[in-house]
Length: 311
Image 1 (spheres, one colour):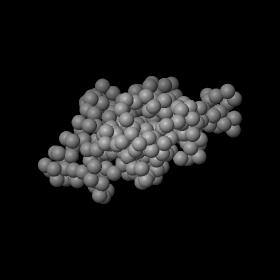
Image 2 (cartoon, helix red, strand yellow; image 1 turned 45 degrees about the horizontal axis):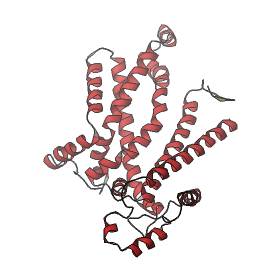
Image 3 (cartoon, helix red, strand yellow; image 1 turned 180 degrees about the vertical axis):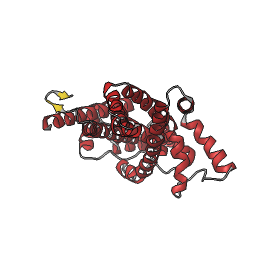
Image 4 (tube, one colour; image 1 turned 180 degrees about the horizontal axis):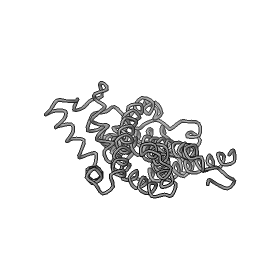
């Protein structure tokens, strides 16, 4: 077990190093000036001072080594857009809103997606199955940047049931969470349905029925527990996808998260902000994937960590 965990931690370190390296190289090859429109208003001397201040006048390899050393010590640099603020301070201030929105969306996606998938599987080729899968297809077909404005206008403005925007209370979380989770609901519903149908055809389910176990007991104790394993496997990437997917939804519903900073940093060639946020999201991804692997083994007692990998 210890060797497996150490191996996984090693993979995580290598993955993060690759992300930092490739992101650093890509940022250095972006077109345009890192100081945006203001670069046209600056004198040659002022530009030289700014380049020296941010270390951009040094050779690329020196910039890379310095940046890697700062990252190892938890320093993601100072934003070009906000010269008095560190990227870590901006993340600390804005990420809680993005995380909360992602958690709301994940809770809705898991609850609705699993219920739809279970209902569809238990009513295979019946009306409820067709309805659930039609809902899933619609969910996949409508992106969040289309569903978001529709929900904001019709539910928020026209009907007045919920706030159409801002981030002022629990009710203001509902519409952006639904917009963000709709596609994920469809994915989880289809995955749960397929997995449930596969489990329902297994011999041990037939044996349980032959022993006289009731349908609810079979579904709760045997079917769902085994069918949910593929869903657990994708929850890690799904969770990170929801958090990173808040970028557009945050713009639509005026959520004070990292989305606006990420978008603005791309427009202004804010190297440190782009690289810092990319590293931050990559770190979350590898941590969540690691936790998912451990949880996967805990859910299914047949899975044991053995020498050389997992089984």
